[in-house]
Image 1 (cartoon, rainbow, N blue to C red):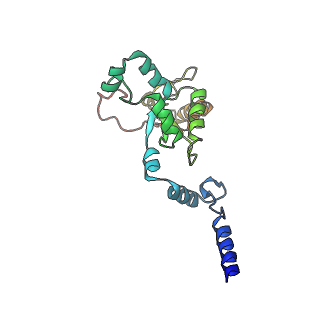
Image 2 (cartoon, one colour):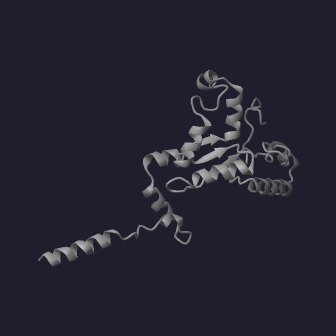
Image 3 (cartoon, rainbow, N blue to C red):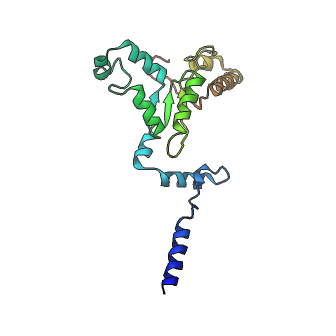
Length: 196
């Protein structure tokens, strides 16, 4: 009887050690649906909420930190990007998988650095980088800036608009940007709006 119990205990312990908890979400050959379901099933509520957070790039925040007093950073929402939040907090949250995207990351080096922090997180969910490249990536040095969309529309040259979008996309990808808040199209209804 003891022998049977020992054998059963060994079998149970060996089967429970089976690491067949395959990370389907990391398998590019799996279907998108299966990958999403697997990833969402692994995420905590805090991680899901965190993935909806978007922060401005660290260089922007560091410039504010350098020019403002600690009290101004803590109390003045007009001057500080995130009152009471430091770049160290943002780095930590990125490593914990609690930030899903960044806005206005202006260099490839900064984008790669933030991505390396995200790869230290439990689930290694990559960061998405977005920028207002509405008529070229005007926020980054050495990129081409084109006429605004309303001016392009006035040209009635859809081929030129397409080529501009292609060139903007190339310049964005060279900086590791994934997402532009564009196209900016709508019928102008309020002439007071700055982009009309």
